[in-house]
Figure 1 (cartoon, rainbow, N blue to C red):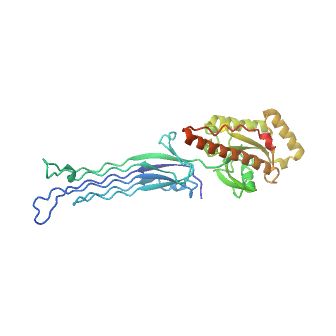
Figure 2 (figure 1 turned 60 degrees about the horizontal axis):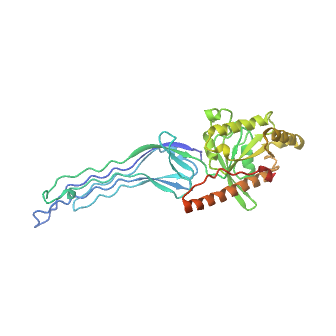
Figure 3 (figure 1 turned 90 degrees about the horizontal axis):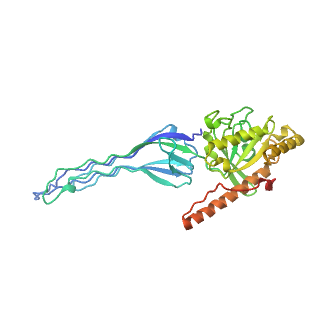
Length: 360
């Protein structure tokens, strides 16, 4: 199944059915009076979040969604049947954006969330509605109200606990395949990963979800390379693992390049808790890799992990560090929800202030 995280669709609610002009006609009833029923209400456009989808690929083949129209009213004061609603199912993490692609109309984060996006038009009145003492045989009815129509964008931001960031070919996909059952494409050239991948880490009785996104390059926030489009998939994470290829000439420069792009992207991503790991340590050997780590810590003031995903070296401490942050984030979110219910206040969940050295 191909991954698609953005799609434009057109939605339209159903129009209301027209009212009916009718008069009662029965044997021995000379003046039966009006009995035209009202038209039925048009169908609504409903958007529902489900946990059975993980991509927007279905919207590549169908972009137009229309609810059913209301039926005509009928004699004997029969109201027309309502139009069929149309339910659009989206995966968890989907945002509904206005046509300008910036205004967020709805944000679905949990399965079961459901919203009536467009309401169907009301049905028209039959001539019974216009009956009065001075107008006992009205021949007036009204057409149904038109439905609403709108073009919207769907944007998927993966629901993951942790994210992987780094330059192209930094070893993100290799790390994901080493710690989970995910099977991303791995090759020795940049931009091997062209779309996000998810993997579930299961270790020592705990589990969490990691999102791997395509590599960033300098100028990604301005559209260079694959741009910063995929950074939205790590916006919702509690932490991210910044992977740096230890075999390159300037590991500090590589680190600063990604940090600059995170700052340029905004949305609080640069403020998230960061775990740093120097990858491909097996290619240098333990002594040279340790020297590189010391130089990195001296230049940045941040202590990195030194790992080799392909050899399975020193991966567990990184996973435990990620788990610790995720657990703290979940606890904080739970406390925030409790406080919000008590006093209606909402607190930020991006201010985790932790010392990474405690897991080294």
